[in-house]
Length: 73
Image (cartoon, rainbow, N blue to C red; front, side, top):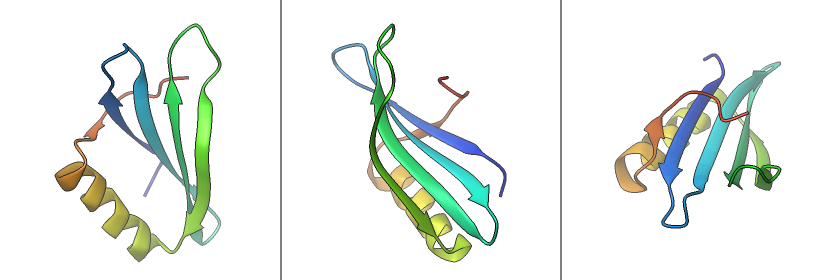
C-alpha cells in the first residue's frame, strides 16, 4: 500500500482527512481536520499492521463517508 488519502467534507467548509502511509512493516494512520488557510490539525496518529489498516480503510469508506482524494497539503 502506498500513501493514500481519504477525505470527507464538513459543513463549515473544512475537510476531515485520514492519511495512510507505509512505515517499515506497519501503516501509519493520521486522522485530522483542515480548514485553509489554517494549519492542518492532527487529531490522532497510530500505526497498524497492514491487514488491520485495510480493515480500517474499508470501514471509513463504507460506513463513515470518506472518499479517496488528492493530498490536502
